[in-house]
Length: 194
Image (cartoon, rainbow, N blue to C red; front, side):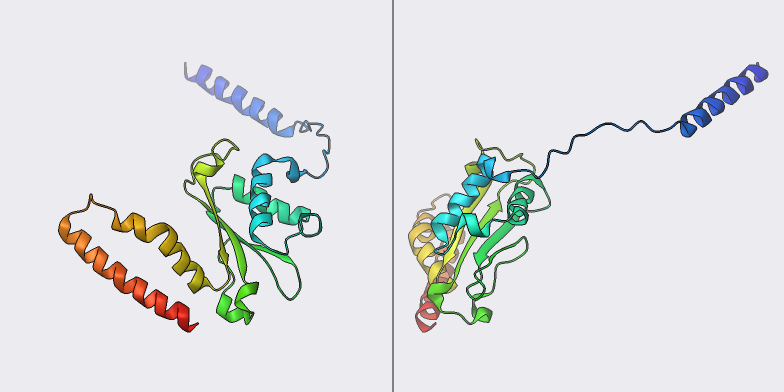
């Protein structure tokens, strides 16, 4: 019985050696050339947001294959949660960054020249399709001075919703509202001073 076990082990080793020495079979893969990302409706959706929010955006001149690749990487790769896009006012170059937006106060430009489009994934685990893109990806823009933009968005979008929230316990609600008013006062003052 031991001899049979040794023979079986020897046969397995011989077969493994033969497998290792075989020439690998290479699959024939035709080179499809560069991918045309402009045909992807999700990327078209992102381009539309850039076109609507960046005054000097010119798709034909600014969207190189590498830039379109960044759009694609954001949509496909789960490691990217956000992407910022803007046009460098000095060079006219369309720029993208997966980590952070340009810092307005370091750019030393006029507030009317500052425009940034950004996309944030609400869910990293969900595959992004054209049908669910508005549910899974938030698209927005910062326009002009960031403090003015934040003040405007707080007044237009968030303050009314937050003040109308009635599901919180009374103590939490009162504390939150008091701090919200302090924040809005400080934001308003800072916005007018800048």
